[in-house]
Length: 479
Image (cartoon, rainbow, N blue to C red; front, top):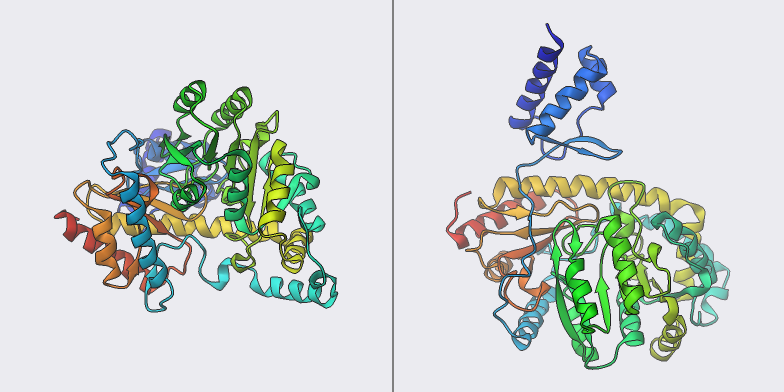
């Protein structure tokens, strides 16, 4: 048999396994060497077969990870920011308040299945036992509960954050870091330090829904900037707004965006850093999910390319380590002194006990091992949920292919109103986040966000199946 026939035969065999479902979406193909050994073929023959499968759209290559079975669920290919909004700010706020009240009430009920909360649910997502032992050890020493951890907060934790910053391409100093009450307080402090009531702040569209009530509380105006579901923030639009001097600041999640899960290319991050430094406009960079990237080495943050201190970066340990500890941090660049004063004037200090516990956990090396486990777990869970959506949601549904984290952004056929789906699902004790919450206006009325950070048990699988049935019925669609 010729070499060409060999690789076509192998490709056909693997294609049959994929199309029959024996190799499901997201499954990792055997490594090139393992496959060559199993089939007694040369490495070049296996490479040719895998490339043929890739050309046919059946598998995809991921850097430093191998080849994976692609699912048949297409990803969104364009920003919807150009779609007319059609709903004013007052209506947006009213709709968000009403929906969030229903969501929060439902999330307190054990008999509801929560697909909305962007916080891992279950013991396997956290090193609870190790943290408990470490917390008890810190507590026995006594000093951690006998004084305020005044700004900037725990020296041990700040030093560990500074050391870890190199993994994301940054060179942070412990003295420049302020410990905060989660990432939300960090964002609030950063905004207060660089804006005043009436200012306009550029944000991505779609963006994290809690930004809108935060902006309202500070009297800020949001200017939504087109955001591509794979490439992130539209930098031509950013540059235009900066040249027109319309922005007092920019808020963005360039690395593992919420809700899109995308990461801006490194060249784009470099350009964004240059733009904010040239125009002397602060960028508040939310790096909450940056350490949950699926590929290594990790992509750098925008802060890694900051030359003049105009990039403020924040994160927390709520999504990765201990949500109830509510420990976050902020490096405010040239605005550090203002942030420290604001922190003292608002919440004064963070828990020394909890901060020291996390600092020691990082120091022990346990955090890096835990993150590697989480990355693998979330990669597998996101792939599994995309497969369920492909199987059960109506034809024409699209879902993002996240580069990290545990969130999926779903575009339903345009005939389906995700707010109507939200209410229909809630009546069956299923909680989702409708797309209207992620932008001012109605451009995301057919979108929703789902979380993939819970046990994917039989109950979860049934819930996704039922949600797909509800969507199909609402849209009059075929499956």
